[in-house]
Image 1 (cartoon, one colour):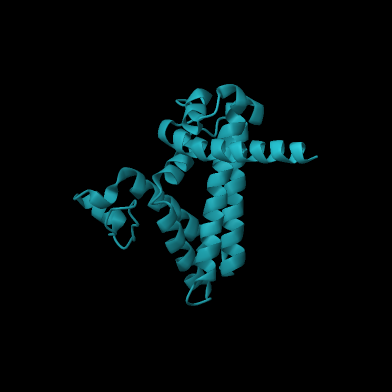
Image 2: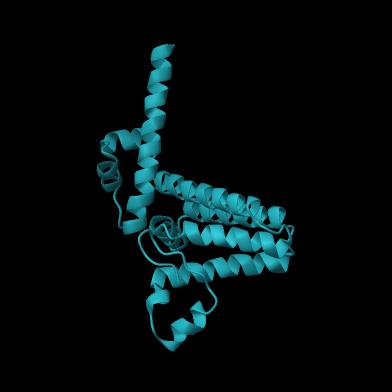
Length: 194
């Protein structure tokens, strides 16, 4: 019994390691450009063991994406809990601030971008829909905002994705000034906030 529990613990720990590595490696190379061997190498685990933990590349990518959404949901929940005012607008604003700080982690940002670009794979499309549904449901239930307010919140989040992906905050051109006006930016660790 103890040996079985130890094997399970080792397997769970390695699964966590692989998923953490998958977030980083898929964020850098995308789904199509990342072989399982690259994830295995990053995790310092044999490719055969990765295949023992996951049925294939799609299931590994989905697990990484689900981890990403778990982190987003946790950040949004924390933001809602720390809102200084519990009005719908106040809660959504606090959730947005928490999310802006989270996507300063470029891996989480880029994994979402790659996932949205790979929705021609049904399992990935389903994971993106599920993650978006969970985010929308959480924003709605925690803020008690109207559907229109939640729609603007999600749309604004997508704008923040685009601006962060393009590094538009550092571009000194009229189009960038128009799109970044009033948008708070949380840079990656070591950078300055704009």
